[in-house]
Amino acid sequence: MVRTGRFAILLTAAALALIGCGGGASENASTNTSAGNASATSAAGASETTSGTAATAGGHQKEQAGAADEGDGLAGSAGGYSLVKVSKPPKAGAQGTMTFVINGPSGKPQTDFVLSESKLLHMYVVRADLTEFQHLHPTLNKTTGQWSVAVKFSKPGPYHAVFDFTALKPDGNTDDRLLGGDFKVGGLYKPVKLALRLGTGLVDGYTVTLDKSATVKAGSLHLTITKNGAAVTDLQPYDEAFAHITGFRQKDLKPVHVHPEQEPKGNQKPPATLTLNQPFTEPGKYRLFIEFQTNGQVHLVPLDVDVT
Image (tube, rainbow, N blue to C red; front, top):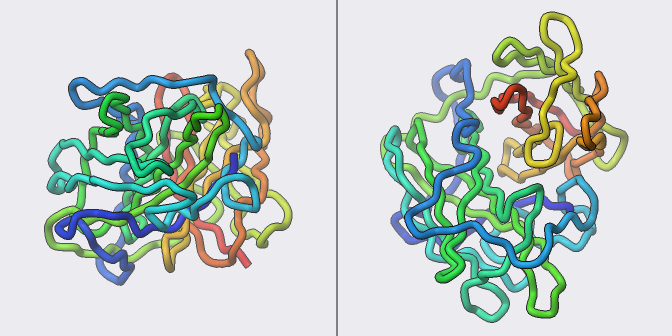
């Protein structure tokens, strides 16, 4: 499965906001993640169920590169599917629930999906200044087609969301789609000036290293995770991968998503260096949010890559 994204979802007028990056105060030392939120709780009555078998069509990398996926993650409609009825987000600092519906080719709510990376839908949310990121797993109410997800945003301002899913069609085939949209968390928006983090990042005692630069559609990226100078070999599978790397281009928040070529199989331990297939189809400066899991805890570190 391969995907990338561009946003423009059908939000209510109160929730719509153009995304914009700008100068401001220095960047916070830590970037917010939904590590504890990664398996988001559902609203009452919602149930995450699947029709058919788990789908892993197209391989382990996800980014639009001529594969069967449609959508760039920036637009709210792609290939017959549309994002509608998106609820207004909670105020900054408050725990709340966001809901939305995905209409299928029939114009009615799509209720049949198949598992992709162990979940029916992945939702990636980033603040416009790239200082806050969350990876969420909304829950589906199959009766109404409404998705719900528990959310909490630490800062007000414009946000960007990517919705990644595989829909099951009546004929048994599937459609991979990547939709997207903008919304605004109420309050005064004070964009934070992005401090570049090239090459190496620290999180929870781990040192994460990634190539500083890349070339469009050429070569691979290399990811290493160490602790106290030694390679970390106890990485646990997180959504069927040793790591998830979700990135956004600075100028327009164009998303990319990629996993290591090495996949968790049985008790197999990861190698000292993880290899990432080239996820970039366009040049630019990208902020990548790297997620990995040890001892049941998901860790997140942001790193930047200059793509030429």
